[in-house]
Image (tube, rainbow, N blue to C red; front, top):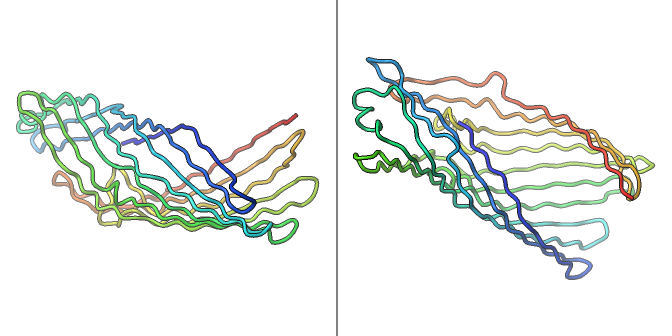
Length: 274
């Protein structure tokens, strides 16, 4: 399974006074979902159910406020709304026999509905010294809104099959901290670490979306210049947890965990301002 979303949209900020600024934005989201499912047929080879590039266009909005009581200290809060996703497209089947053929053999389209979660984020930044800046953030994301998936399949003469898949997901929380140090001639070093809780317990985790807790560690070094050449090099390590699963589907038990479940990002950028 592959679930992908890309968004774009305008945002607007307004400085009320030297301490308070506000902002808001709206995004158009394009979401696509691909999934291929093997159907266990005890007396025959596996059949397949495949929906490819079922998609939807939806909208999401955000609003935020920053408060800067001193030249050194700044607080910020943002809210991100939920987004109603209704994916639809073609459904294809092959190799189905017996009751599965009778049930899904004439199916040609599918609709999958779910919600992308709303999120509340609070952050702060503190300039501890002339060279050292500290930052921290925390957020709460309502992934329980995503946990209920409504599926509708047009099965031709057999009518429409409607079902609800309850993934039993729960809300998550995040906490992170970072520091940045300027060591002369506009050169800066930064590093940070964050933790996100798992949206689903081991007993409810499924093989199509095996999300778990996430730990991120990142470092960066570069030169920042208001005029002239700027550059940066960064690396990030993201650990996605063990992803333990123990589920029974179609009469078969699937139990295990991921031995290797992480990503490493390396990036470089160059910018010239004149």
